[in-house]
Length: 201
Image 1 (cartoon, helix red, strand yellow):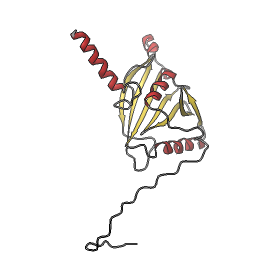
Image 2: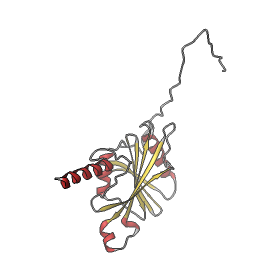
Image 3: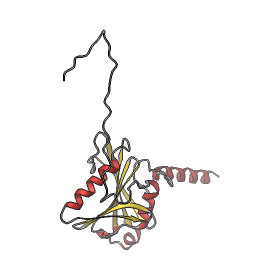
Image 4: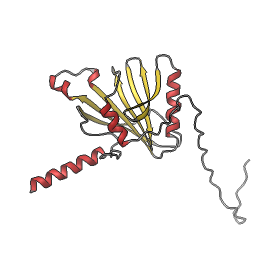
């Protein structure tokens, strides 16, 4: 009985760490094996790749290695996939900032940017010199999967992250009109005749 209870507790802890089906993981990335790809490393990153004005963010990364290659004792660059999840304080401006970012990459020589749907997730596919990445925005998050030396990302990882982070990328985002940027709210105070404030302008 005690062994059964211990097993249930361990399972619940693992589910909460991974976020469980349909929920964002506690530390951003999926800290568990995903269909033949073994979770190997978690790291918090200080630098945020896609900056959003007035929206604080923190990035989390994970590495996954092909389990079959590990058993053979040889791992190449094609046997490792990296995941980056940037968590923002709010959802405001995240999707727009990603579109601006990928459009800028598309204008640079050496990068090919395509908007498409993969494993049910609408995203941006970015192929550059010796690297391959998939990007998409979700509510308050930005997801990036891929790595150097890769030409694709396993469907299982795309589906696992797509389930926890549903894409907000709209069809035609790469070429369509850019969303209007939200204007910051200006704080106003009621006029107090006993304590008037000078008008500097």
